[in-house]
Image (cartoon, rainbow over all chains, first blue to last red; front, side):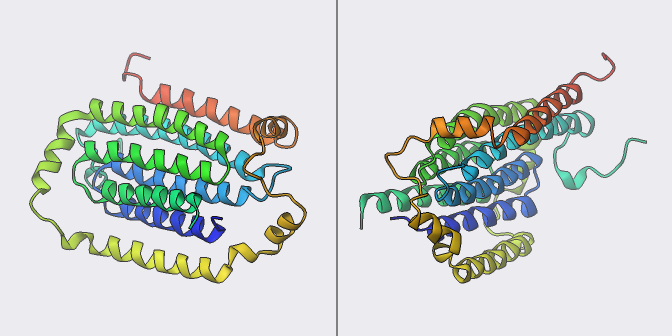
Length: 101
Length: 182
């Protein structure tokens, strides 16, 4: 049997890797990948706990909602990244340092 | 050690190792493609947690949708990003990354401590669900139950999220149009 703590440890590791990517990367796309990793760690927790709810399936259903939200976030974030690239010719978040006017 | 435990360790080692590689590599393209592997391994973990429908959705939406979108954005933002990567090559371990590594490691230690202290397998509601046979068994079919619940108990969040998805996609299309042609 796989215990709940096993899932929790794996998702904690994924969360911390995602946190490291968000803090250290100089590239907006890699930061986005870090955010996706954190979201996946959260979904893993939802699914692992949802195993103990076979009547209302709350864990799995909210995992589905989180996946849909991740898709929406990614679409908007990539549109913003493309706009930033068009304007600044770089996607390094440290170099984007002025407002519109 | 049962086969399911071996599979669990296999999947989790693949997921964590590929995530670490995606985090440590300087090459953006490799980072994206290794992230594919992480997502597939996570789908395997969802199957081991008896959530097969979530695993299939993960493969369809993440691997089929999100990663293709990321690759598109990468290709459209092209050469500049690759040039930045080439300049940073040569240093294996840079001192500038130390605070980030420290932050992530400390966070990991704190979370592991909390999780071991919380002792999730002995929570009251988890024990209740095991005694009242509320736990999903490996041969149960959950998909029809998910569908019924999605249309009854969780109808409001379902509709709210559909509106949100529509707004996000319209917003993304609006943001990525050519300037001045609107």
